Image (cartoon, rainbow, N blue to C red; front, side):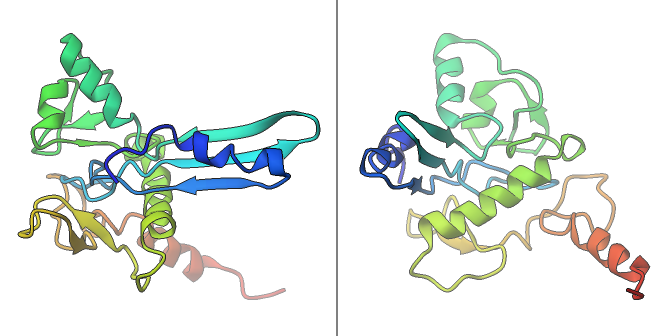
Length: 193
């Protein structure tokens, strides 16, 4: 979807009936994976509403990007810059210019840069995209969508062919930032009980 309004609206329909409400959707691919240069994930909103006795339900309503694309559009209309470390330009460099984001740039994942745990937002976005938009498709590791498909819509994309930013060490591409750590942890694991 492009925009389905306030995600929490749908989730909040469940608590008055004594149920937990969950509303997920995908969006256009505005979010760049950690160490990547191009947006391949959506902002992928997540909303949950949980009944809490007789009180108001507990509600979570959030995007998996560092900033919603709507805030970038508002900043562009108002002629205001974005805060640092929320978005990139078309070359993958951090920018505060909303125009640069909207003309080929991307949003950083929730958490921002790798140094501030942006990989967690990237992983949350990947998994939410699987849950929110691909329930009737086979689940491929890293499967995503990319802007600019020949059909004018989206094309299947897993990020493997996206070159990492300049200066990123080998093995630290868009999908690989956790794999070397996992392998090192396994090799150091003590097999004794």
